Image (cartoon, rainbow, N blue to C red):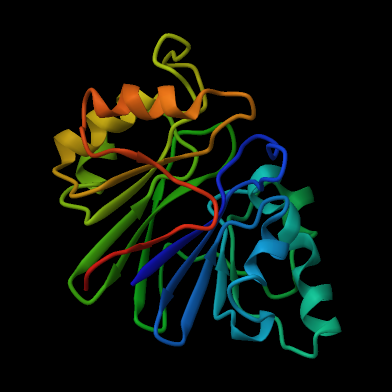
Length: 233
């Protein structure tokens, strides 16, 4: 399977960038993970709107969901049916703006992908995603701080995409995100094969975040806009 980075910023997009959005593809199946500001435009650089198989939202903060509010309009205008949308049930005001028929499930399948949602540690209802395709395991932490189940959830992941919003000197147990160092520690202790960092606040020194993670997990890389990463199945 292939992961393409459509957006890697938060809580708002950097100049020329986009907020959280990741396209997971295998054959003719294309699933969009989160749909933050700027993601809908970038999605169309890679696939047509009609090729989208599903949208999965980790939580309903605007930097992960704002472009999803316009998805039904975009689909109708382009002559396509809106694909299935999987989303948390709260907060209610944001949920009400999603395309009609949005649903919640802890486990579901889209084409060859099987999804299992794990509660994240964040100020709103939020989930991490464990996605399997044949023998491959891909984990997206979504927005989360450290919690007891994190290592086991990420155990033996072929690719771990992790929330790296803070330097460790800025981080505390009360923060809503992980630090770069904790992302590296998580990948190492879980036995992940590869680590990508994401969710970079504009103005942050991304190379320095990458280096902080590499002190714990030497092959850690910062997710780059437009790049695709293969996950062997």
